[in-house]
Length: 164
Image (cartoon, rainbow, N blue to C red):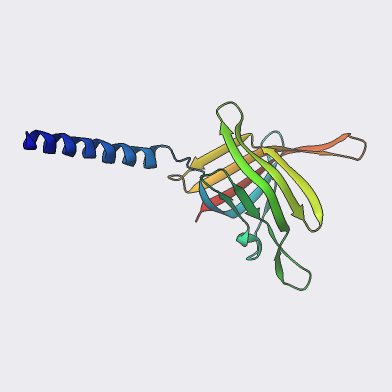
């Protein structure tokens, strides 16, 4: 009887351990982590390159962080006229990310950029993870309107990030 109880206890322990390992590794979204900005491109709607920005050392400090609890933060570094480097993002409130198979990845919240409040409500048209989930490419259509609401320009904006 003792051997049967020992065997049952061993099997229960084995089942519990195997289930917890599956839960830890199988459910994590690959976007979770810290991502460092590598490049910025702008294309026209025919996919022709309009511009590709060479990033300075300062701008390369720009990054995004996606947490497992769906918190989202980012920094956007820029150089001042005196050669100093500063983060344009002064604060982020309620920064969250979500994913759905129909809408893809979305970011929302409120950010303060140089004393201007910006409501984050971005949906990326395409989010591609490549190179064994070490390269993140974000692609979205960028529409620019004038003060009267007239459409001035439409282009495709592509940012590439590498996982830290």
